[in-house]
Image 1 (cartoon, rainbow, N blue to C red):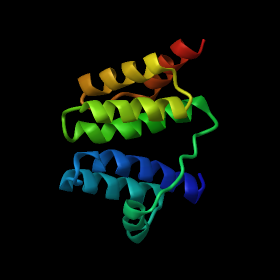
Image 2 (spheres, rainbow, N blue to C red):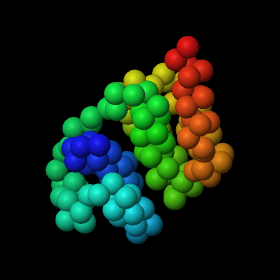
Image 3 (spheres, helix red, strand yellow):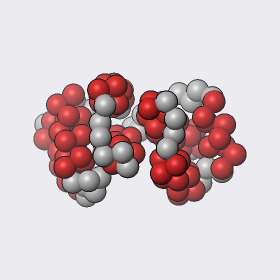
Length: 131
C-alpha cells in the first residue's frame, strides 16, 4: 500500500474523530496505534491534523469494506453515533463504492458487536449487495 493510501486512511479517521470538536485521548491513542501499524510516523500523523489528504479508494471491493470498518471502529470508543458521523460514514461508503444499504448494515453490525466483526463476515455482507 502506498504512503498516500495509508495517509488517506488516517486522514479520513482523523476527520471523523475531529467531528466532535476535539479529539479525545482514547481516539488519539487508537489513531497512533493505527498509524504505527500502517507505517506512518508520528510527525506525519500530526501533519494530517492540518492538511487535506485526498481519498484513494481501494481498487478491490473487499478492501473498501475493510476501510469502511476502520472508519466506523473509531466510533466504538465513543459508544455512540451522531447524525453527522452517520452522514459522513454514508458519504465515505458511497465514495468507496459501497451500496448505501450495505453501509447501514455495516454500521449497525459494528455497533451491536462493539467494533469486532470478522473480515469474512464483512465481505459476505458486501457480496450480498454486489450480486
